[in-house]
Length: 479
Picture 1 (cartoon, rainbow, N blue to C red):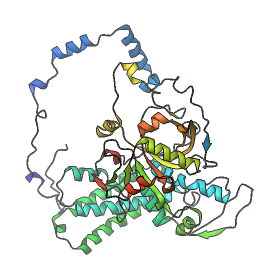
Picture 2: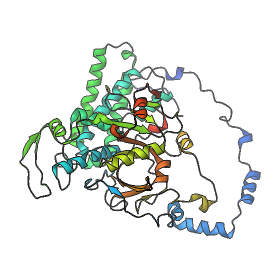
Picture 3: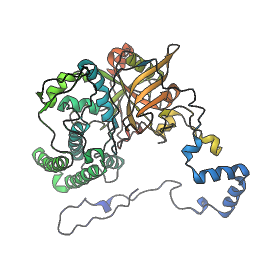
Picture 4: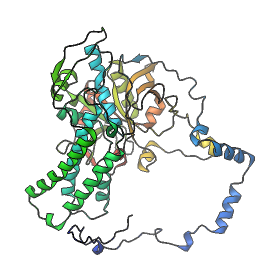
């Protein structure tokens, strides 16, 4: 908990109200200092006796002094029988992309899901959409959404859980499929060559820091007493003044997004198409899937009631669009629908815990490929539900499934297109086995034609609204 101080700014009226008048914090048992809680010399002696430096312990200590825990826990035998062959792969999914030093995995995955159909239809050699173009409007829309929330929360107590969560989520790189759907639907899309990544687009820490600083100042401003009974017009004027600064930062860092452009491409036959003029919307309608609403959001969240329609508060990019939602189902059901989609040559957007056990150099995410228990002699295991509830792992990275290996009618492993560049994994590609999928994949986006009617019916039911600090969506930085 941060210390609350009285703010005194000479020469301004920017005060935060009577912070010092708030009720004193009341600790519960165990929070206050206590002599009984101390780590005593007797306890230290007992610990030394309980954990003697045996020859086996010394060998592990020597190894850890010169190697990473990850390197020592990798079990090479687990990956021996995992080949890079799949019974079905989507043809020409496009070349590997690189999100670089940014958290735009959700955006890369979302745009990469849309391109195989374009490559196939237009017989292109390769194709990529501009992430920087969508990023520009994502940051602008995120600022607008947060300013609207700032108005609604302007009387919220300082350092309440709601306000602290809001300040952490003012603006970042993270997102979800519903962000992609909303942005492309509203702003269209452009080829990567029309608005390529520049330094700020690919290295977002400084950009996010600047935008966060300006938005935090705006939050402070709107919490002043003069806004307590402000008219809608006054609040709109305040919001527009902030958005002008946000827009200026975005233009300077990312460049002015095109409103129209000329573009052509060379197909597989070596034929160059005529140079044509497009707007982002006309390009989207001509080349991309026009019905992005046909995709159904499905989650495996074992800490919540199954076969229910979940919704997460604040988890939207457009202030006037619905929050992120998903039907909560089993991992086996998600895998079954994902396999049907791949067999029909439709890639699958999914979110997983990328920090879970795996060999990222070889591009293998396999259950039990890391064994920390054998190295330390300690049981670290937790259920998937408890992993989320106790912040020991969450969906922090979005990718695209482009292949499946089916044996005896069931998927045993998946081919995954990542967005970490060609130096990661197997030239950018990763393999996930079915057990890892069940344990560490939390969300998939599936075309409704592959979704059973009983699940579609749940998607139309009233949602269960989860709080903005729910761990399932607390991955605002992305990877």
